[in-house]
Image (tube, rainbow, N blue to C red):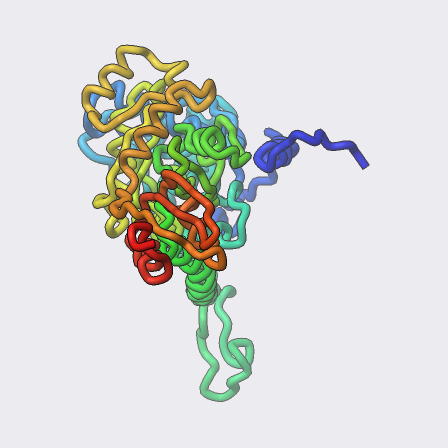
Length: 467
């Protein structure tokens, strides 16, 4: 039995485990019949990236392909080439056009690639026709992100959410093996129905679709049951009026690092996209000692698959139920404004999320260009510049959180009986205690509290002036 270092946090163990097993290039067992791709495990080894530039500047197109490269490397692949084609819109048949598809086939053959990744969501027809031309596996951006989510999901709820999203994506993209009728079953093979049940029967692809729908229905029931526990915990915090702060932002912007810096949560931190998927909720206190919860949520990305937004809806509701959103953006990124826009686009799909007050936290200040930081703070007036790695700016952030949390509207000075010490404890946890004085009859509490605790103190305690 090996000796583990005693100071490793939970995230350190996860990072060590993740790095212990890596894919090995060149050991694939590809099927010769390319039409069978939907029935084998998705493998990413040596890939060529392809993007269609339909609008914006060439810098925007290159940044998008650069992000696709980071996604592919996070999935464990070796990127060999990156190609961009200028078109008014993607070709409806092959995404890049038949002539460019032939050129792509030659590039794939020359480089020895076994996978092509397209920077967009392709229709089933585009995937099939492009594969028939280039003769290797073709996947799109959505399938790539789903593959990364499948690798990184740890909790039971996270795995169920990812599987549901994958099945939603796969269902319209199933296809048979060249219409092979031997894949049809009828008569007794169809369930032993005998006379009246013979005939073509249910084809294999129809059987697969039915099984996928049944599995999706089961997963939705499981996610609903698991979300009940999350809602119970959330309602318990709400009933005690503990303010909630949610950390949202682009993937790899430093959300988990910020959570660790503010609370010492010890969650996994890795320089990779979508390193953490499962939400983490931790307690924290403002400089004045007021308790609040801090929740780390799943990272967003441009063109985040709609299936993931639907599947992770119960998790993303942590944002909509919060009292304040810390919108973390990577200040060292070439185009941080596009990250802000992408996150807000996803938040707009969550009911009530855009109504929650937002503070933009510009992270990685130690690696960012001062000109970019100045530009961001000029555009985002309600912002603060920090570095989760070095700790700079954390005092300003905590002071800003203190100002933005719901106000403690009720100031009380009451005599609390000793047998109700729980109310004094709640005042410490949920409010701001200004002074305490222990007397023979009880504790004189001078504090600022929220309405729920104020009503309880008004019922149980005595105003000091009447003593």
